[in-house]
Image (cartoon, rainbow, N blue to C red; front, side, top):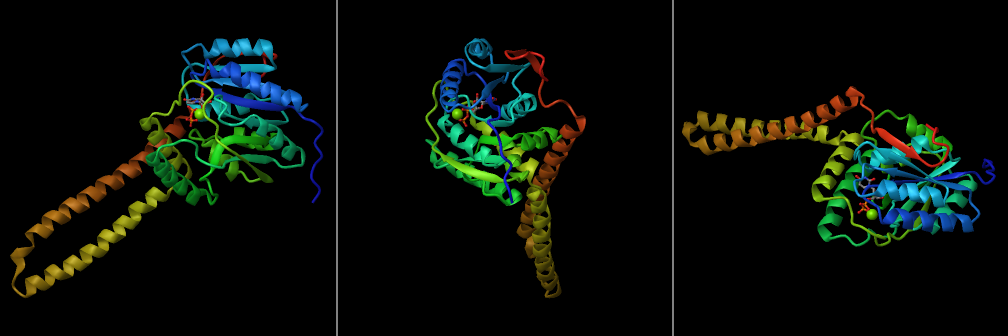
Amino acid sequence: MTMPDHTPGLLTVVIPAYQERLSVPMAAQAISQVLKEAGIPFELLFVDDGSGDGTWDAIQDAALLCPARGLRFSRNFGKEAAIFAGLASAEGDCCAVMDCDLQHPPEKLVQMYRLWQQGYQVVEGVKTDRGRENPLHTLAARGFYSAISGATGIDMSRASDFKLLDRRAVDVLVAMREKNAFFRALSSWIGFQTAQVEFEVQPRAAGSSKWPLAALIRYALTNIAAFSSAPLHVVTVLGVLVLISSLVLGLHSFWKKLSGQALEGFTTVILLILLIGSILMICLGIIGYYIAKIYEEIKDRPRYIVAERCGGTQNAQ
Ligand code: UDP
Ligand code: MG
């Protein structure tokens, strides 16, 4: 198979930024420098995810100094929404997505771009390690990624949002209508010619991480529900298990009744009521969770609202 030959095409770097006043100028400077030196035509596209700390001013300043544009959300819609908004208004022949805090090393962009030039349509940044995280976080992350990996059939344990995508892959992703889009998994799910580039997670350039525990748990649940119906099957499995145990207990009680010692099973009855009751509640909760997600999708609200744009031609959609 012959790979398509790409003459240097424009690279759009999508950078979601939330409360990153200090990181924006650093990221703009570091990324521009690397790409200029490598002779890669580029535009930076910062997406201000409803920050309240002057991130938007920093983006406007950056747009004066280097080829950068900015989108500003009307409020915080989350990193996934910011990534998709960036992809939707990117003009490049290929688009990279990277964090604003320089935890994704900009030098790797050059390697990713070269792979794209060789004909790869999805170039994934893969973590060599999970950075400085506490053991509990690592354990939770492992559980989360094995659920997602099971659902997608792709090993996600070292996956990141650091990716470079060909225009065709970007168009496919942007055309997806799902509200709970999980970029990291969807960009693998779409297939295409894929290459991987390893990178080491760097320490944050400035500011602090925006993922309190509650937000992480919400993020994990949303994305598991978006990608997998396994929890619904758990409901069925639990039902079968309860059915089997009630058959056994039923036979047991029947035998007791026949042999004239029927009164004894009081504790068993209480335990059974509690057990079945709680399993039913959990099952209803799981089903309810999916119904809530379906409701969200069906309302068809926009994933994000862009309040302002800056830099570039201003009229690009
Ligand atoms: N981010 C965002 N919206 C949010 C939270 C984070 O756009 O609601 C951006 C943030 O500015 C950064 C990237 O997502 O560019 C990764 O966030 P962070 O560094 O806080 O996460 P961590 O690296 O700790 O996973
Ligand atoms: Mg970070």
